[in-house]
Image 1 (cartoon, rainbow, N blue to C red):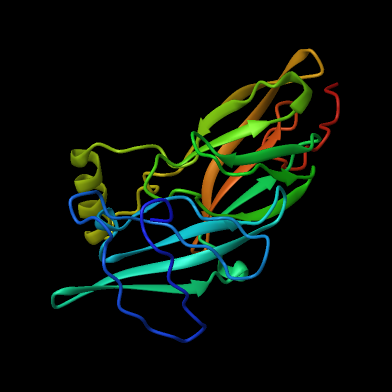
Image 2 (cartoon, one colour):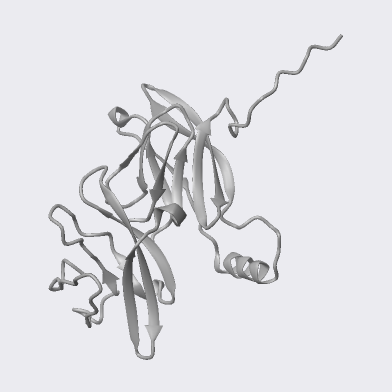
Length: 228
């Protein structure tokens, strides 16, 4: 942790042993890219992701970011933490803005910088603190200083998570538990703008899609001929 221990430098393709500064505290890891201007990442609770992979955003200044894949693998009495670049072509997460409004997004309840997202554009997305709830904070109008928070991946109880794993193992064709849709209201120029959203998958990528309330899912609408 950058606030309680000494930072260690790690070159590309280099491996280094690492010990926790205070073993009685939660194992929270922070990382900073070596190039000038990059800040410390959000906290990664290593104990909570052992045996898993997460994608974490590293940020320089508002609007500048890099998504890094972090593999946390146990081996005998050790835990290996491996960092690698996220392949944006098969990103873990993305946010697609199909609405007519530009906006700014970040993981809610964190100190991450907001990422600008122009209308009708898509950005790869990652979590500033991967073990915190996976919620989006959305600004349509920075002048209002009011944002909207919505679930990207809804939190599951332990029983729901177990049922989802059992369903996947049994080859169930049910929609994945993370898929959902809804509406949100966001301040815009003194009024409330209503947007629809849905969370779905595109290959390995979980995609959060925003679109205008009046347009629906964006499917083409055909004009039917008037009756006799």
